[in-house]
Amino acid sequence: MAGSWRHMTTSKGRLRNSETFCGRIENGGDAYEAAEECYGMIWWLARTVAGLREDDFGGPERTRDGMLDIIAEAEANYRDGLKLGGVQRDR
Image (cartoon, rainbow, N blue to C red; front, side, top):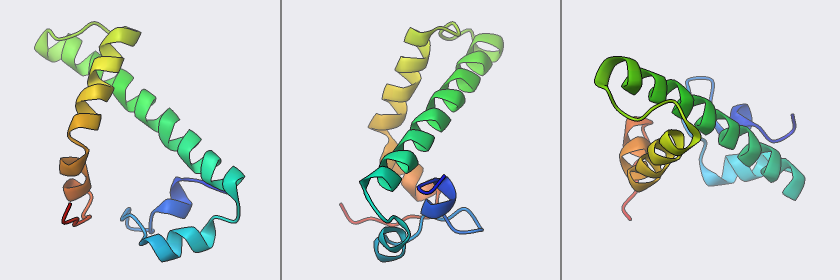
C-alpha cells in the first residue's frame, strides 16, 4: 500500500513531521490509502474497545452504534491521543 500507517509513522510509532510525511505521499491516491487504513484501524479498535466495555464495564453493546459512540468519544479527545502518541501541538 503506497499510503499507509507505516508512511505516517516512524519505526518507533511516532507521527512523522509534515514535511517527511508529505515527501512519502506521492499523490492524492496515496493520501486516500493512508486515510483508508487509519479508518479501518479506528473501526477495528472501536470494536475491540466496545467488547471490553461490554465484558468488563457493562457499557455499550458491541454494535455499530456502540462503536460510533466510541469513535465520537475518540474524536472529541483526539488532542489527548496526540499527546499519548508523543505529538505536541499548541492549538
